[in-house]
Image (cartoon, rainbow, N blue to C red; front, side, top):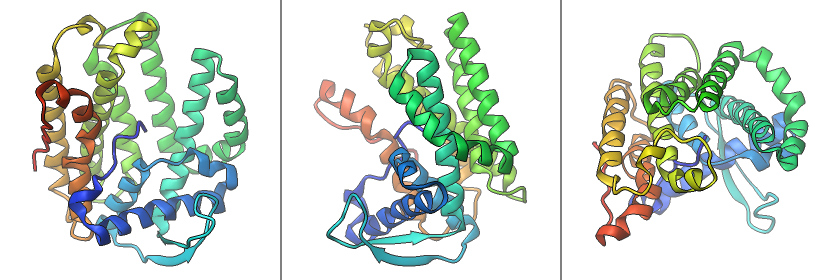
Length: 281
């Protein structure tokens, strides 16, 4: 994940923002219980979206508790966990391991190599437990590496690689909702990849790293990029609306309509002197 699937807390209000954070803490707790204390360092808010989405769809039983943690040693934090919190923790660890491995192979990062070594045992176990998701992750990265190695600046092809990965991660079980979740995940994954490429364009160009938009470096392409992202997000939300979601749908819409645009607007809004929150819902 890239850190874009986050809520914007102000429109949610205090109580709803608190519930959102409680699911994040629930995934953190699941990571500790399933994969050890150090695995918690890999967590980001993206996986809270997965818990909320699948939780709203399947409505599993919620377990609540309040306790202190390393980050908040003096104040108890509310934690909400479900069976999907465990699934999200497992997906988080697998993705984190592959990212560390990728960083090590591409940049020779010894820090990433050390992190991968810590996560390797759990990753191997999970690759057997989730063969479908594991195959998608490996195939997605293999296809991306091929594009990067050959310097093929095809944004659609590169985005489809991550879309395929996200599609399989969103499918918790094979049932009547699998096709809709896959379609939503494909569009969402493409959006996230394109967003990341846009945000990293300057840095990637300066460091001669792969980016499918390098030919646009130095040009004013804000509207071009915004239009591409709007199109992909509209497709994602089309399938999102087909799911029978009620619980926490307000938080999910906040993430899709506002949260996903926060980094883009923070970068480009100063050029216009205002923020353009562009969610299609």
